[in-house]
Image 1 (cartoon, one colour):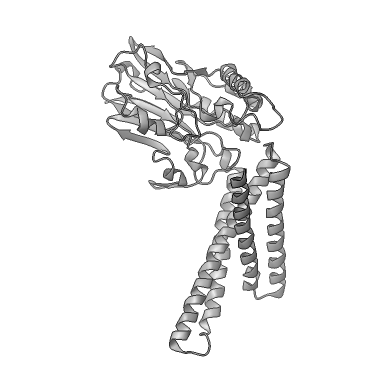
Image 2 (cartoon, one colour; image 1 turned 45 degrees about the vertical axis):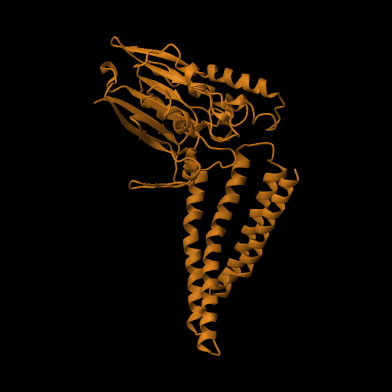
Length: 416
């Protein structure tokens, strides 16, 4: 407890020092017009007060509840704060430039700073104002539209030993629904209908149906009935599906085992069959493949390690073609690649791509890569494939997406 208290004192103390520093920079003085300066000062003060009001609301009013207004509050705070951080960077650059010029003045033994210093510092601050509008606009989009800006990503995966009857077989994967974060039924409906329109052969869901409790899914029960696939709809549990997060969220006060049982029942209610360390055989044209599922297995000690590959593959022949669902991609490097048998294709989620990053013209970056080297897309090692889905929903602590948009994956199995 004392560790958390000390951390909060240090963290919020540094944030307060940042606010004092930023205010003393008086960014509104870049305007020559007195009225613009007055308005700029007023807007800055209002934004600062609003930012801290959002912090207070999140701590004291929305601490135990996540809904539309809590998401708006958190989103407003993040938008204002990220914008200020960009300004802060340019303030620091301006001060570093001033220090460099002062040192140069001393070396040159001049009485006054060159006249260019003031004008260049003002230019740096103006540039900061312009640049800071980019994250501001980006954050606004991510809060209002980005979290429902669903992307269908199609990926061919080629196997030499794919049974001929399954050549061209289309698997739809989605992951990390996190029902408790959504604040728009119509937004979720848009994503579900987009999945339905893909008309896949098989639907696989790779975990984290909820943030905390099964009741979060209730508003969307009917939407899941829109999903159809002739070869079935299967799922595995994610780390949020074990009841650990449910005991202290909202007004639901239940023991962990009850929450866990209700979440599993909810999977059944919405038509997703759980493969908890077991497999099913799919037959087509006299040939077959297996869909295998393991319970959550995460490298981090914070997450349950209940996945058992030996149990999941029990009863299968050595050469059977298999698609494995495992929520956490760290399982692939740690256990699946070195596993005693060949796992053709593993499907994971969990990372969300950190819900923030860049993906443009083949270049990809997300802070998620520093925790999960396999954080999004297709990977191959030792003749085995891993696909990491970027997630359908969002974490309740970060209900927005910037650059890494919600994903619906279509994996086309190809023999070649």
